[in-house]
Length: 210
Image 1: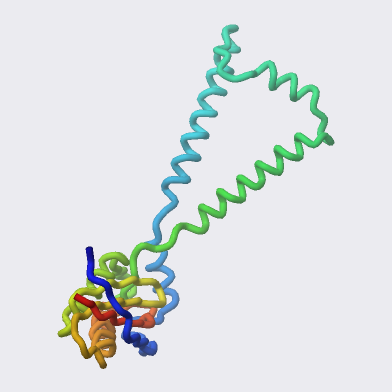
Image 2: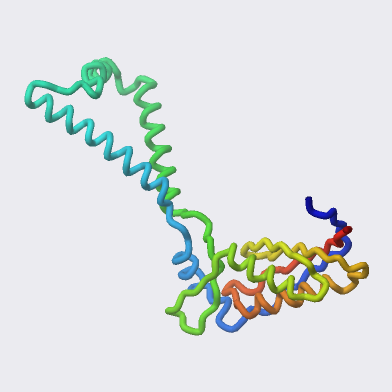
């Protein structure tokens, strides 16, 4: 069981000027597009569903041409439904509306991929794209916070605009420790040089009670 902690001090950094090479919107968009994960799972599901439906239809058509349809699809029932249904009935409108919504959803998923899993880093060469995974950056900054004397452990959460650091210390007097941690983490962020500029660094120091 971990020892109880008491939150005693919080420090928040002001955004610093962007590092050299940062702030280039065109390069940032290009790099973000490179590191943005693709919608592999939805695309795979749609491809499998379409392949299965196309295969079933092909089997029914081929079987019907040879006079022995496999009966995998309710062809007769669908044919009767098509003959009996009028264009001004509610069923065609509902089916068409559902198809349109499904198509718009697929288009949205295709044009709006998932959130990037990497932080884009600045580069002097616009043709060079660099990045570090958010989890790796969190561990990297946590080690920087733990290098400060008096800090026993640290947890870091990284987002595009903010770095949240929670440091634990067993010291009785932790005055100024939050600023030291903030400085150490900010310097490590500057070394990485995020293309979007230094995120807002917020530090909370908790005193461990043994």
